[in-house]
Length: 311
Ligand SMILES: C[S@@+](CC[C@H](N)C(=O)[O-])C[C@H]1O[C@@H](n2cnc3c(N)ncnc32)[C@H](O)[C@@H]1O
Image 1: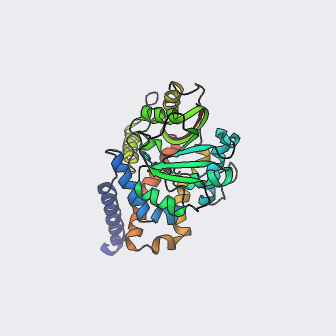
Image 2: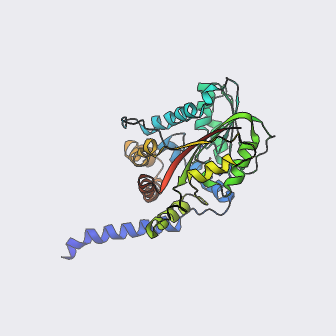
Image 3: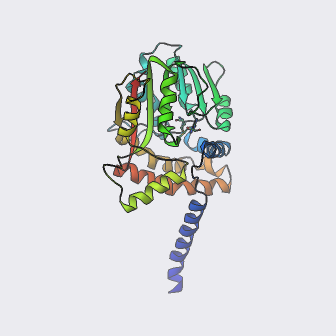
């Protein structure tokens, strides 16, 4: 009898240890400094980059074509957002600010395929260092450490502002919108993609959903989530926006990314194994959060919002 129960006991113990590591190492938002340290660590251990490539965002999976690779889907996402937001109408040489640029995946595509002159900013010094290393000298991209809530650029410095999956890390969404629209020239383009919650005032979360949201905030340094409508209103009411804001929910295009991000570990096992045993523990540690994200986005508790407007 004892021998029969042993595998269940060991599995239970393994899950308990995993849960304890997951909770103890939660990356709770305290200030933009905690966001910087989290991304510095994610960049320096190279695990994310080896596994998921140079884009730290979800992929775009066209309806009816789920067979594309995760990395291909991420590049496709950039081109789809360019098309949807109208950035492709801008001439070569246009000045673009990539706000929350990661290690420069989007910046390089915007420069290489569209001929833009891109400035990428991120709160993480390690990401700036890596973005510079990854950028060939011929590309018109430069990277700086800067806080998106305190941009050191003159009013109207850019023809377009591009920001992908950075807003959920900002504790003040009004200031985030203010800074983007202040540095955008009149008539310029804003293209933004972000993680949003559904409207929690109209549809309050159940007890279980509240627990899930708490984990999603605390695991990946998010201070708060707001809904697509709330952020659209913030943009619409800003003194520097031309008023017309268009938003959509892209859950159906991006949701396959969650399982794909786990499958990628099996497709490229050496990406993890070659970084040593700690990398294996670190990868397993992210799986519960990815599964919770997948659940929340599929159930509509979370929404992948895209936004466009003109300055
Ligand atoms: C999920 S990553 C997305 C990176 C990049 N946009 C991409 O798609 O590959 C979020 C990015 O936002 C940046 N970020 C978060 N808070 C920031 C802040 N207050 N100021 C500047 N960058 C910030 C992080 O450093 C990180 O580069």
